[in-house]
Image (cartoon, rainbow, N blue to C red):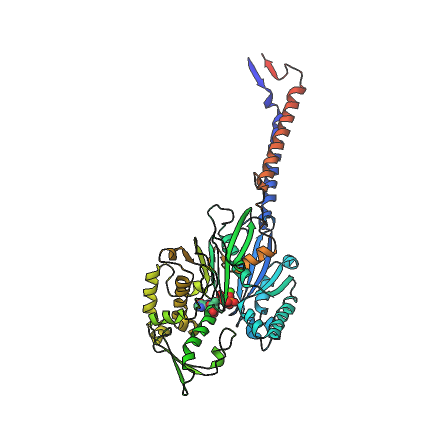
Length: 487
Ligand SMILES: O=P(O)(O)OP(=O)(O)OP(=O)(O)OC[C@H]1O[C@@H](n2cnc3c(O)ncnc32)[C@H](O)[C@@H]1O
Ligand SMILES: [Ca+2]
């Protein structure tokens, strides 16, 4: 006696096979449908019009994930040829045109169908703040020129303005913490140290009461409140502070009748360059000195350290100050130090040393002769090469003596250029803020990602459908017919 299984009936086999093929096709469609969501990118352009140069940054992010932290990344950056836009004060109409190569590049990189919706922001920093103080009309003309030029592109022009020092500090802090995904982690945030050509910023969460309201900024990001300390020191970027230091050293010699020889401990032995007063004392940061001078290097680190200390004013009306009567609570936690902090410390190989080792190495470096250095680094720009001893000493003095980093807390400073593929700086934070891409409250995260959800729902509905069909086949037949007995 043999029991024939009704599952072997050809109709049922065909129906089951069809359903199986159906499931496979539908799951495949769901998966494929899900994939292009990742490939649809949106773009944003920010121009960082710094005192020394302008950079154009292109950011991109998956269109569907605008409010998820860590999603916006730098796709491309372009350095505008020549100096910063503030250097066009005498020929403002040329400021806009200077951006052409980089903006043309942006047009090529961003897909055509995204051009119209891509926002473009230009933020100018300390160079333009100084020009505005020195020559308001010229600064307005320069801004107008870049505005008119940027409007000739098919992007969505969102404005060109001078950002405040507070914004510059706060957005730099947002950038480094966004890129490190610190807003969603319980581990806390890191401070931001930015050293530009004309200004420098320090920003961190201090946890202490703020004695001056100007230095305080509050943010609510992803459901957490952040109470920030921030300050931007105008004239204390690495180019302007060199002018300040030269001014301090030259002042006592001004009543000399013959050629002024400035013997500078922060420049290398053998460095001997005639400098015109117009090339040095050309900014509102320094007095208008009208004497040319011979700039002679001595290469004596200890004296250089002492000379640099003189550029800071140490009067203070608060319980504690960094310098120039600016309140600063004690530094707390880790810090990311970028821009010239990185360029200089990286060139000098000081990024992984402790404070004492860094000072020792710098002392030897400053004492190296100018000829030896030029021979050793033929491809490095002479202006940079001549100034690394000064800039390195300035960085150490600023961080140790004024911000109060100690031997112990020195190692909390990370000298960084990029986090992942994105450069550390204020531009990303600026764009995230203006496009509202960092929500105040954490978005409710669904149990499953969208694609997974679609696939699961499809499989479940197909299974229900299959069971329904099977049930129908089984129960439609009269009882007893399911198993046919063959004798
Ligand atoms: O923030 P502001 O003050 O407006 O200035 P900036 O934005 O133009 O300043 P950067 O951070 O681009 O650069 C800071 C300084 O470092 C200089 N710099 C850039 N690249 C450098 C390198 O490789 N080595 C040494 N110095 C460098 C540059 O000329 C500036 O004086
Ligand atoms: Ca800058």
